[in-house]
Length: 228
Image (cartoon, rainbow, N blue to C red; front, side, top):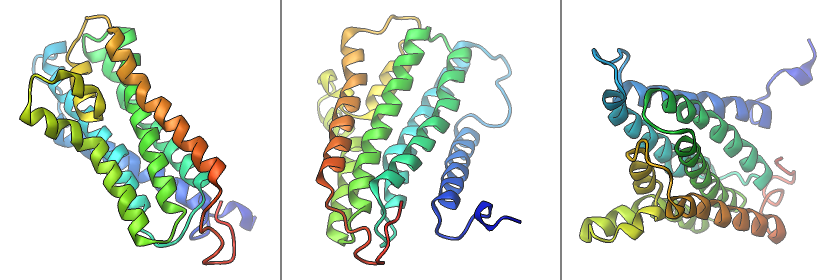
């Protein structure tokens, strides 16, 4: 057997398989917890919607907090390219719940696309934070990036808990923005919702460009070899 085709411990090939496995396992467990294995006795768009909204929240938590923190838990520095590949795999996996959800809810195609764009944008932004943290060995640096991911998720909900009238803050967190977007059903997406969906993309693209331009990573300094 060709040894190059066999996954080696620590290799990117094996790591990407594990990313897909754990990402799929997270979605499956989330589905069982919030929706269950049996469909509703009277399946309608109204009965499916609460479970679908919670499923989106679980996917957002996985992409924005669980995945980045797990990625930065190791002390080994890894290149941003590897983090981008693994983040992309998870973002593709997340589409497997977003688009089919439009078939069991009252979402229009534009609203389904809006929700998919929002979830992907926040995941890409959190991936940039993970990439910035993973390419450095300093614990403080990684803790700072983990704190950024938590702020992405929780800052707006905490603010809204003190001032429910500040609806403008909903777009500043995947939790509040996805929950609001998923509940509007047949309503056409508004300009404000498109702006909220595109904002994480803009920040994420800028962040990834800065990471690529900086080139100041600890990859290779600890092990003597580049982790791609």
